[in-house]
Length: 217
Image 1 (cartoon, rainbow, N blue to C red):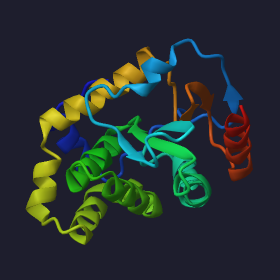
Image 2: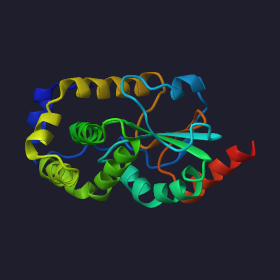
Image 3: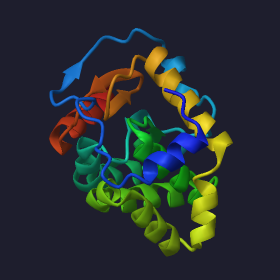
Image 4: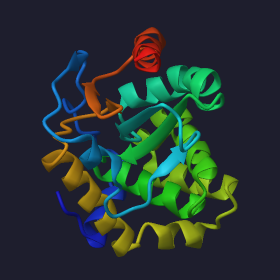
């Protein structure tokens, strides 16, 4: 699943390119962990983007993709409630990791990383912007990325340069490869609650129940 800068640039120019289908599971399922919690905990190529207290009793790691409709719905409707109830109150440490399903996801992640640098709060804000403009990102990727970049203070050339960053692209794809091969992530969204995998879109009630269970244990 490695991709070159030339391939990304060429693909983004095709405005009618469809989003990859069938990679986001529609049904919720839980599988026994085949890997240790330490495998989930460590970042690979890129630093983790994290919100919440470092010593929070519950750590949630989410693997997501910018154009995944299930990720978008969770990000828009569920995550803000989780943040208010658990992240902001020191009970949950939340880690967001990219799992690109197509070249548009790669471009979105590259821009989010470029805008945020090492600022996790800014990164989550950009991801939120992308989820809220998801339809536009799918239909008119380059134009929408330019608009998001402008809102974040980046000029058109800076956004263009960002999308030519081969090193960043390589890091993203290396992390996706690790998640797929080592953690057995197959689609988005995929969550790890204190190391336990839960694949598929979650409602607030389902997420809330899992957090409460871990807080009691």
